[in-house]
Length: 342
Ligand code: SF4
Image 1 (cartoon, rainbow, N blue to C red):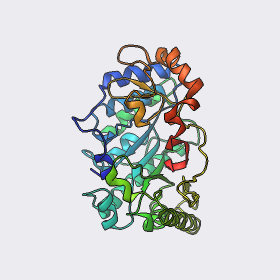
Image 2 (image 1 turned 180 degrees about the vertical axis):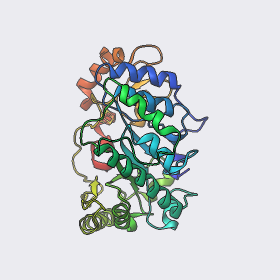
Image 3 (image 1 turned 60 degrees about the vertical axis):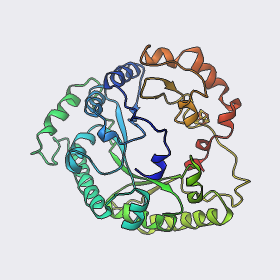
Image 4 (image 1 turned 30 degrees about the vertical axis):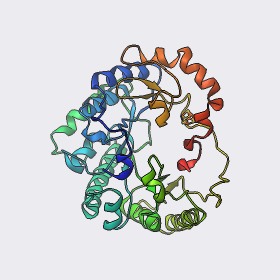
């Protein structure tokens, strides 16, 4: 586990009952749910309910947006690609270095050469599936895999089971910018381009415990300058290194910061409130992923374990919060209101 993960609350792993997830997704789909993000603050490919959720999303015509650590546990990259690509709008791989030493320093135990090989295999299956889809043919990738046909079948039968024309599964790197990797961020962009990874999304390290403070790029003028230099280098790399398709890697949250940590840019709108429903493993509804919401500091919005999600979504508790969130003290200092949590 990386140090950021180690900052999470101690105790046994918290995992959502797959039946609870299914109820909530079915309920929300009836009201136009577009996307499910199975974020567990852990590795979603290890969650016992993921197969059921993949099938459900396929049947309901809802997209899946997955973030994984890229180790593809249990099945390996080819079979995971076959499983996920038919329903995924975006597969984000946590990626924190361009050299083995840096990647392993941020994600202990990570074998970067193996991770690159696995990602190549995943992208190859994605590309083959997309080519097959573009031709209007059955998926041509790895047809010998036993699961493939069975997985595609529900999509063909589903009332809204076809993905919108022209949409493909985007593969992204999700990077946590910090002192350990700031010098390699441009190389990460070049690596993404070479592998066919269309987007590099960068978030700033959030200091959730004192031991992380020295790693933050937001802590001092000198650190912010290193980030700003990395921004220029990443943009140049994206411009100079085309994807195999000929396009350019999309950079997200890659923007220079004001150099004075005491005078950052003003906070913008909340990217979550009123748009997304966050369910904690026990079913409690939250308006956003802020840790304060998990602690109940934003309010009590009920639990999908005891009530339909749609009823909670339209209940006075959440509606009142949505109407008045800018006045809440947690929202007033919320890092999510700046790109990348900066
Ligand atoms: S705490 Fe942040 S993310 Fe959550 S509702 Fe407030 S502004 Fe939005």
